[in-house]
Image 1 (cartoon, one colour):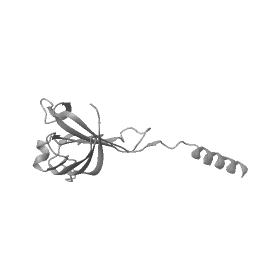
Image 2 (tube, rainbow, N blue to C red; image 1 turned 90 degrees about the horizontal axis):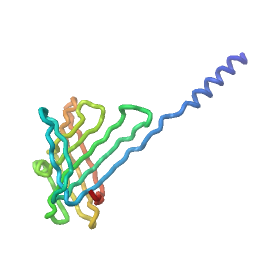
Image 3 (cartoon, rainbow, N blue to C red; image 1 turned 60 degrees about the vertical axis):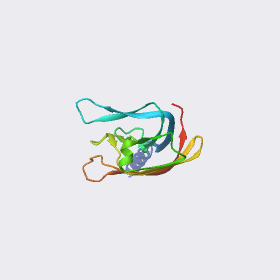
Image 4 (tube, rainbow, N blue to C red; image 1 turned 90 degrees about the vertical axis):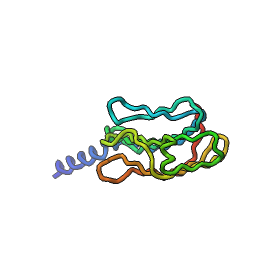
Length: 168
């Protein structure tokens, strides 16, 4: 009987000593860049593309959300980036709706271990901004993106955040 109790106590101790995986919390980054532009780069022979930020004359806004993940687990990472550009000749406010999103080069990048990863055009919804100070904008986003994820439902991004000027 003592042997069983001893073995049971060893098992309980060994299970409690197993380290729990370390959770890395989600992260948000909200930046805007002056004197930039977005350029769509087609991947030859495919319908795929990616967006590059380059020197230009517009304001470029980029929101990145990195989901919480476990450091010891492979393939659980997920990152989304939403970007768009607006002309610098606008006043301290702007609103982009539906078709205007294409003209603003609005894009959604899904980074994950999933079939619908990559860059997608944003062409449905609203993005608005109000300049709060020389280096800060309040941006409100409510858009849908057809990422063809298989269930027929679009991805959605709905945020209201302050974007800070970042030097390119």
